[in-house]
Length: 215
Image (cartoon, rainbow, N blue to C red; front, side, top):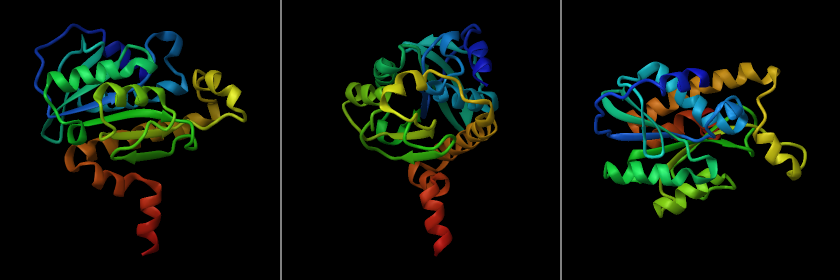
């Protein structure tokens, strides 16, 4: 799916629309990083773009931007091309240009070392939790109050292995789960656009599902 995203984003631009929402997928640009764990945010947006893209892509806000129409709302899909650790500049530029409220109109999709592979967690706000792209977004936006969808990539045996681990592709035996997670993550983003973060958390977070099941 990530290959599809990059092919789409090289097409000529089209008249842009004013978005009601912005969905950001974090990752690193270029073929070297294309299928790596760190780029799971790009992969999720590729799945979403395959369902809902309406316009043609453009280079904007230090990233690859694509218009989509989801549930009757205009949505900007944005993949910063600043490299992961500087993603905040791209995100803040888009939010301020369109005069949107990060608390209600922005969600960021990123990888999470502390979640098992392919597990999802939606949060309405909070700290970066060690994710450097989120950390930069918080710094550049000046707030932690924006939604994020974390996708688990697993964690290596030692902290020293983390840098290399996030830049490795998923193992063959992980791909079935990961491909399913990409589709589920796109479903979650559709729900966020339609009904907001609280409803999305209730439906897609594993801990919320367990609580419902125990009632």
